Image 1: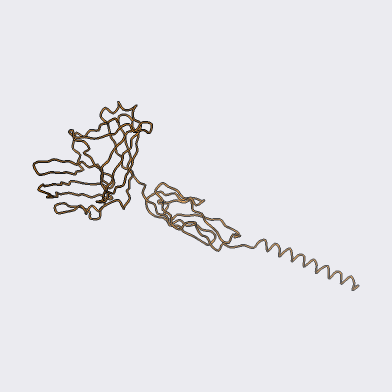
Image 2: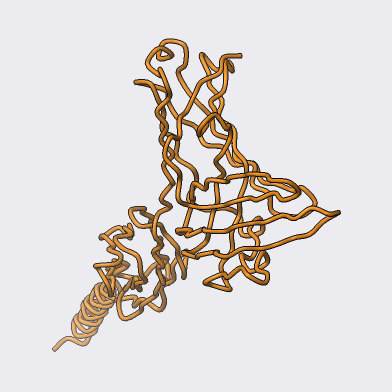
Length: 299
């Protein structure tokens, strides 16, 4: 064979093989899989109120991972669920762990579900109340919650609508813990507190009437002609305060009778007063006497 043609043929074969190997390697490079090396969440703990929702965000590493798909799972769906986009829905009080997974990597978030606040309803029917329907459109209840001996108080405001001769307002379910006092602080000889850890607050209140955002009057209550006979107590748990306390001061005797069976939250309490000679008797009770009536006084 002619050496010249043999050399040319050999060179051609080498070029062909090299070209084939180049394209084969190029195809292999395009098929390289980049594995997920890590996943993280924007939150590792989350607190929600039952009924609320929140969305978790997952970050998958490396950024050029071949498959960055994330799957979501809740270990207690009866407490909290999670959808394909990381949206968590609080179902019931309790806790659950939300797990996000990408490749073989996982990340978790602990979700705590709390109960929603349940406001206390305060409903009043006013004497001759329907005659005020066109003159009153809203009300505001102001509670002066005294929490120390220096006269410090927390002003609690609840609003409502006036209609059909009366109104309903919803007091907030909770008060600032710093504005509660230990129920046992008022315990003395003759007075018993059922739960030594209970914390309470109590205060006077006023209810104002409005028309077009202007104050037009106020409401007051009375029993047998004695006005302003109610107070509002707040307790952080069910607790009873019962018994009698005696106090002597400058020749006078003061008797304090307690008959309080407080439920967690707000409680309406009747306070009574009577006097005879040098003795004054006060009564705080959750048993409201009959004959309580509400009136409107126009300013």
